[in-house]
Image 1 (cartoon, rainbow, N blue to C red):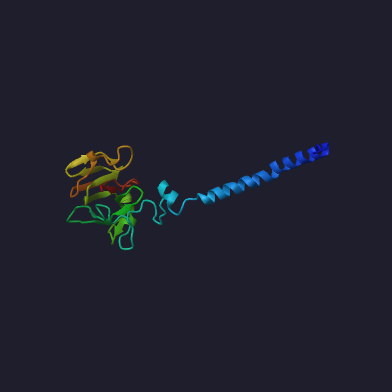
Image 2 (cartoon, rainbow, N blue to C red):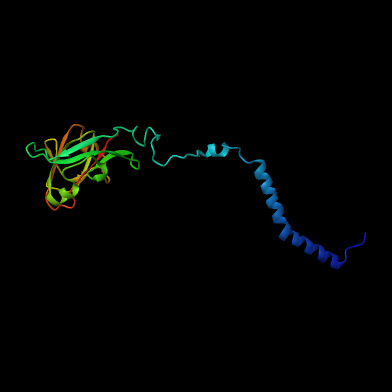
Length: 203
């Protein structure tokens, strides 16, 4: 057999080089695709192993259905307070307020504003901030009060320090829970832009 001539060796080397540069990547990609197809997980296989389950529910929702809106199955459920000045001879109706379910902290709450108001009221929060006044209500369920300013805050027969008991590092401390049925009274001075309170209920 005749030995290769120099130009044949050079041409062969160039051919090998071109194959390595241009052809080999396509061969590798094809092999990978065939391997992936042959060993691809069946529907639900790898997803189940990773714990992934597709869902149409929004985050933080609690068993929502058309008949059972988010949160209504979470204790204590929708509750109401009726706020007055407690003076039978000159009764001021500050309104009846119904709790809403906060899906982000998974608790019911009531804020003294129009969004929670059910029906009508003689005076609203704007009046309270401008005129001041004494607000009295009965705690409808176990919970905490956020009230940062005023003249005084009474829970039952005890004066309490102003504070946001459902916020911060000490939030929902059992020491400061107000039991259902406890009368609460808050007095606000006139021209108090911080007048108003919020209740957050225990589940």
